[in-house]
Image 1 (spheres, one colour):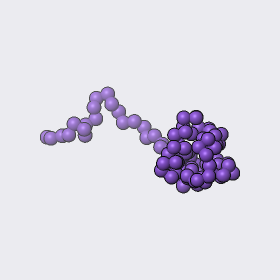
Image 2 (spheres, helix red, strand yellow):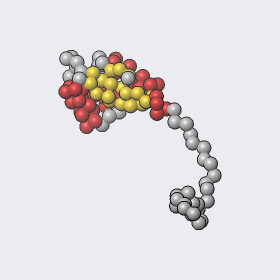
Image 3 (tube, helix red, strand yellow):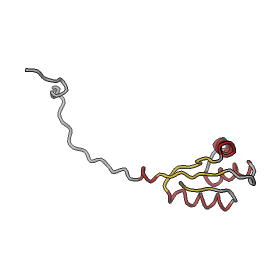
Image 4 (tube, one colour):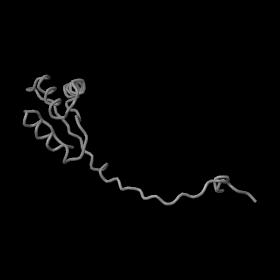
Length: 101
């Protein structure tokens, strides 16, 4: 008789009770808050806005600002739409183009 060792129940190991797995629905709803480059706002203004609105550290804000400058845009925050909406509005109120994608 031939058998596969993975088909056998090992001594001392019993089948575990079924465990409910929580549905993960929020992961599919994660969005990016993207800030776009323009020819009007200074580096300092964008950095200060990201620190104030997104709660970035100085280093994070500076890195995002350089990416925006060189690549034309940068995802500065990830989260649910509801969490990002007020940040997007505050960034736009500061005269900076930001969109949720």
